[in-house]
Length: 417
Image 1 (spheres, rainbow, N blue to C red):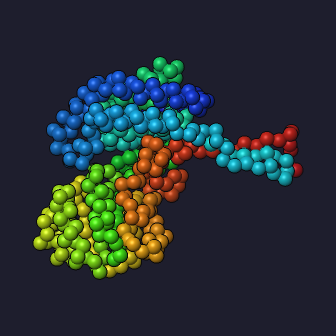
Image 2 (cartoon, helix red, strand yellow):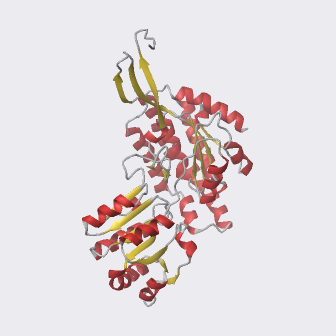
Image 3 (tube, rainbow, N blue to C red):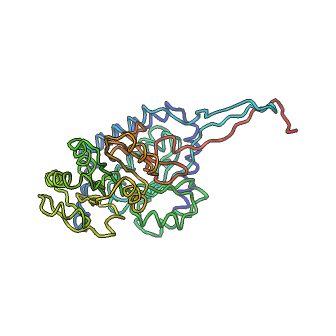
């Protein structure tokens, strides 16, 4: 089964690589229109998945990721249209020069070929990934989780319908519909057909892909994100940022998971924080020193355990730790962070500069919410993933991240001397 899918995807990728920007945009606009036309079918399929997920006692965080509403589906369609408006990187000349030997040499952006994406309860990923891949002339093989089975089938059917109606092979976007885990293991070995693999899921999935894949893997999306509250802050504005980073969408990988508070302001700051977190229904997981200052506050407080610092909550829960200074805060981030998104709240330019230079994460913020780590917020359009590694891409992966380059040399019947 996968062998045939791989062959078909590779053949489709050669055809996609030759499309003009206007041809690719025409297909994408058609996909966006069909998503709206077929919205009732897609939402009905999503309801099937939601009903099954609730029956399996799925967590509220995952249910939120899985859920499609008319508003979310319209937003997904508009995201596809936004991709149409983005500059097409394919064919772009990165640099070039005339060498002393007479060779005119340049580097041109080209599609990667076939992308494999493994993801869990995120139906929006189906469209985001497909639109970005099509815009960059790549074919894609999708393997969503069993939680999104019906939703993914409905969405891929819409995409393939748009492709065929545009005179392109449906195999440009394919989905592995069977939930068998053996198929994931088989996909990881399809280096003959798949050029890059992107897992979007939990730490276990990333570990599996790193250890077993013969295909280059882009890992990321595990967001144990921190915010350090310095001794010099605007308290009101700092609380607004913390509330946004934790409460706007706690199930997102860029939501705040651990708050580090300078000990010099902790006594005055934490009681106010407790009031704000009570309003947001956030449970605080406090260290021993933080517990002393939080236990009499209005917010629910429990004792933090070591494992809490290492994992994503993806819910209305937040760790609170008191640190002696910026150096201890950075040490904590280096120990427990996942190099996703980390922030400092401070009025000191010197402290901000030190934090930015010494925190080695994909995105580092000064007086801003970690929730900004997103392809749309970065002006990249829809993202295929957030990479927390350093090669071949880092941070939100937009269109450029789905291309590579080739060297092109022109000579006048030029031999090497």
